[in-house]
Image 1 (tube, rainbow, N blue to C red):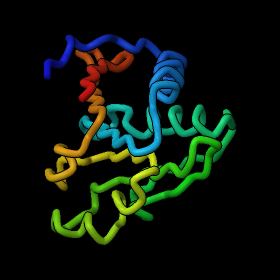
Image 2: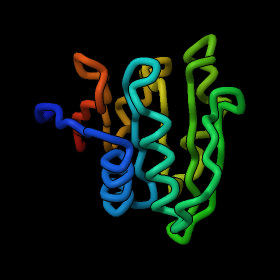
Image 3: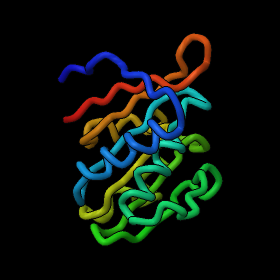
Length: 143
């Protein structure tokens, strides 16, 4: 498994377009890990993916930082959007039920807080703020 060099997403419209492309490639059972520092664009990309999967470009998609997991229904099936930033112990991820439904599409921010998820991931999206702070760098690894 090799990760290609990062690509620059120059603006929010490019992030939304990438979200649409990724959504079109996802299928039930996929686990997508969204990696990157605070402010790197993980939630913005997850929002774009969820809106594309649900077919609702205006869907309210809040960050699940406090809820930990936010479910959505789409024609393709259930979507779970998780944010593990507030987990105190990696074992707590089991209580969230992220992998309970093998037909759900699961998007996980801050997955490094539960390293066992990496083995089950079908897609890893690494986001970073480039020097100068304009746009976002993204590298996608498919498994």
